[in-house]
Amino acid sequence: MRALILVDIQNDFLPGGTLAVPQGDEVVAVANELMPQYDLVVATQDWHPADHQSFARHHPGSQVGDVIELHGLPQVLWPVHCVQGTSGADFSPRLNLAGIQHVVQKGTDREVDSYSGFFDNARRRATGLEKLLRENRVEDVHVLGLATDYCVRATAIDAVDLGFRVTLIERGCRGVELKRGDCQQAIDEMRQAGVTIQ
Ligand code: VGL
Ligand code: ZN
Image 1 (cartoon, rainbow, N blue to C red):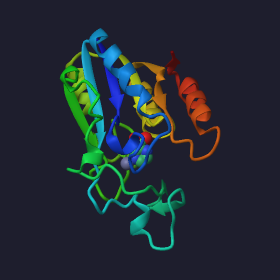
Image 2: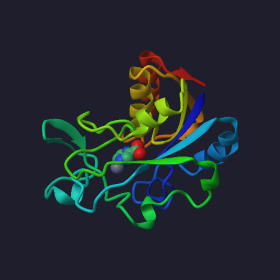
Image 3: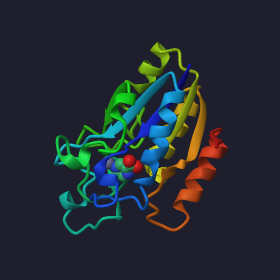
Image 4: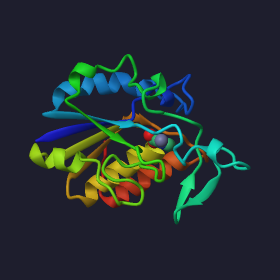
């Protein structure tokens, strides 16, 4: 079975959102076009409590883009984004929700971020995505969405580590690019990890 994973296609990551990814809205049409070609379509949803520790505002003296240490892990500080129950956390209104079978939420623990759709960044808790894929006998996982250099990268590499055959649909991804070259580096790292770049 083949699954399509749509990573974080949420308003806060789209133009006008609090953590807008440049041209992030361009991935929506690609997602809608490709959904019918898969046995299973799963969307991940960044879903933070308002006091999430990845938000710069909770670290006085720090700014967005700074990297701090949070419980022993490096943590990039972000603007407030994808707060549970806000419109910024909603999927794009142009995304075909009827084509999505499951939604997997992540980033719900205020103390640890979760870039991957499978595990939090400390790898303490699983989100249930792996179980869902195994229950559906999925062997091939295709990934697109936002952002190339964070959640897409982490999700694709974890999927390889878990033993799935993984393809990145590059035209369906856009990145934050805090530093120039971050997206290209993420793509190189995915390829090196065993992801097929399509
Ligand atoms: C993401 C930064 C913070 C992402 C989520 O979806 O790539 N990036 N939270
Ligand atoms: Zn987040």
